[in-house]
Length: 228
Figure 1 (cartoon, helix red, strand yellow):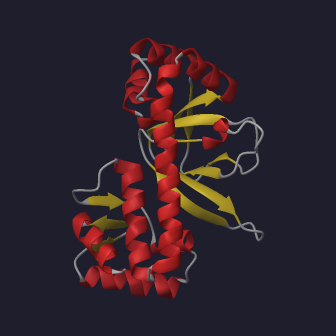
Figure 2 (cartoon, rainbow, N blue to C red; figure 1 turned 45 degrees about the vertical axis):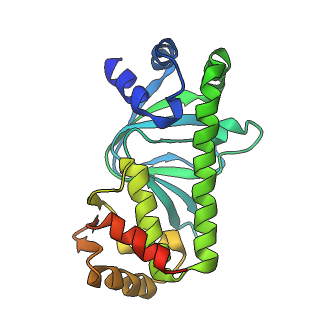
């Protein structure tokens, strides 16, 4: 219970809840473990749940008509997903797969919404967090429309780092392949490799086996800003 409470305390979405509400949330939660590459939730499935990641990482995804997994984002510890709990009439919009061995803290939709209703002082933070998600989505749309592939790739790397670590002002390593990154952007493997090599040449990133090191996050921000 203590480990669960510690994780909930660090989760940005729950930052507006007072201590007694967090303690109540810990009692309502279900802890679940998933092995690497195990499907956690499928698009359109029910019941819907709000999930906080306690350890490991999760690929938020969709599936093509051919049945291929298309990764949209990778979330790390203390992050949350399951926005569909805020739209009770809508099906689960996206699926999720364990990116590595992962433990999650899960809340049933009804229980979570009842908790928020009992502690309405949390809503400003909830709205802020949903607003940040919306802002991130709009930035991706803007990048797709206005920026070249290298800048789009740089932006997505920073997004993933922020979702996994919360901060991107120091070097971080992302367990991510170039193929997965290209899938997120909807570009070919060749285009992904060319853009990545440009970032490597500028010493903004380093390619390692099964991972990408963001060696200069501030430099990536400058690189994106220059592509306007």
